[in-house]
Amino acid sequence: MRYLGLDVGNKRVGVAVGNSVTRLASPLAVIVRATLAQDAAQLAQWIREYDAETLVVGLPHNADDSDGVQVALTRAYAEELQTQLGLPLHYQDERYSTATARRAQQARGLNEKRGRATLDAVAAAVILQDFLDALPPS
Image (cartoon, helix red, strand yellow):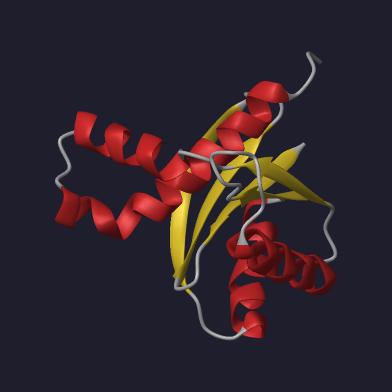
C-alpha cells in the first residue's frame, strides 16, 4: 500500500511518500497553504502520480498527551482533505518530528536557513516513517 504523509502547519504542509512494501518514507515537497481546495488539488496530483491509497496525518499532541488547539485545527483540516480526496485517513503522533527532522538536516550539513525550505517535508517523512514502522509485519 502506498501512503502520503502530511505534516500540517498553519502556513505550510510538509508532504512525504512511502509504502508498506519497502517500509520507507521519503520527503516530497512543501505546500504553502492557500485555500483548502487549492491544497487538495495539489495533493490530488501527487496522489495520482504516486498511486497513494491512504493519507497519514501527524497530530501534534502536547508532551503530556493532552490535545491542544492545534490538534483540533489539524483534525478539521485533515477531515476536509479526506472528504475532498476520498482516501482513508490515519493519524500518527507527531511529537518531536520537527526536532528529529532538524537534527537529520544538520547531520547532512544543511544549516537552518538552507534547510527551512525542506524542513516540513522531512518532518512529514519522519511522521510517515513512524507510521510505517508501527505496521504489523506482512
